[in-house]
Image (cartoon, rainbow, N blue to C red):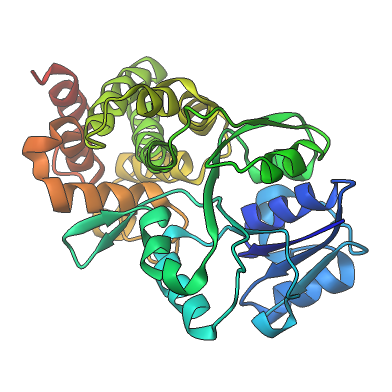
Length: 341
């Protein structure tokens, strides 16, 4: 019987703990979180009160799941670790793991977070690259898990498919043993491309929400199509595995479809909020400031991309950002993005 550890007690970390606990081959799941109130609620009632408005009152299996705020409470013998910490907080968290001398003992370290981090204003880093900075100390086998899998659906145990890149066989087998979970672990899957797709779909989702609310869903679909291609080119890889991971897999095309059209994306919701506020004459300086919404990864990623590459490399993305910031009208921004040659 396996013991698993989930780092991050947000919506997706909580959902992953439920997925793992439903597996008949898992005996124990530990969730590491920072909030004592969240941890107490999970251990006492099986409910993460912080995410109730987002996912509803799903009750966790407290016979298998235990939450903690201390790394010292984690067992020494662990089958696999799951990283569900927001990407913008991941550098500090991984450094904390390194400094704490937590031993992974070569066990699988499965990233579930989506986004990119702008390091020192000069380099975009996925969680894979952040992990490699600490890998000599952490010594874990890195994998990437992604796909169309909102937390609410995972908590409700409805069928879903996820892509697992870097699978060693054991993690995919464990996940498949959980009811409703289908795992795509083709050797063609590229960790780098899977994580890149997970970050770029958030940018497209933010654009989709803003364009749909400003103009129309026809226009929003057109914008996502041209931006998705533009953002892929930044990856700088055009091998079969990268194209498959980005354009064909559940981590790429599947996640893009869900995020833009599933009705639960924070990135889509934020784009719509901006459009609504613009239509009401709101203060744009306040609208785009999302320090209190750190899980809107699409905005952080868009800013990082344009800061590093500039509008000449990303003309379509740049025009959409100008519209979101109110520099251009929605119509002008969209026509500029679609008409660029």
